Length: 264
Image 1 (cartoon, rainbow, N blue to C red):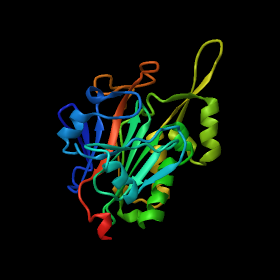
Image 2: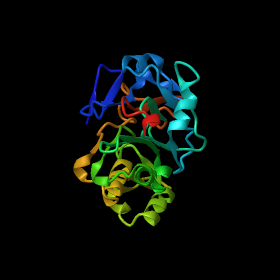
Image 3: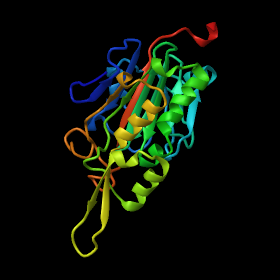
């Protein structure tokens, strides 16, 4: 469902010709929020989109982008903008709408319901993962568009992997109190020295995949990127590796064509 292109971005859901989805690499990162890269958008053929730029806060609110919102934003000109406040996931079934999120280690989780032509995009850091942001997005698509889990395809994109996501015991305890399977996705390590501090390496990608499978998405419908944003300095920005970078990579998904809402 994905492939690295010419060094500017990763193509996501490449087999679905009715949508365009991407994850920008370091070359096309932006300074903080929001993500907007006109050069990349033009390259991808989405240069006249209504761009959705949620203000991410590591929570589990999912915003629905509907027909009226699209038409109002489209009236602004070449690009229109919708900026939902305090939102970490967005869904739509509107053609011409580009859903975006920004990332510098947190996971992008892409959703596409091919039967109902509906898309979703979530920003899943460790806090959002604990609050089941991916499942909340799936549930919102079911509520609004009638999406059935067997028809939803998911891509868990590049982000910090288990090899690099080191946490203290207090973070692991939050996961273990929320998920009885948390121990299957964590590795405990006691650091040497006077403190003897205990650390854990947690697999955020694996936990999100498990949650989506438990919610009913077939394993065959889920692809998980093996790329670690913290490990790969050449391709990715990393908040952890760089000690607090302001640079953010962009995730996006865009429905190219569909019956106009005025005709429904």
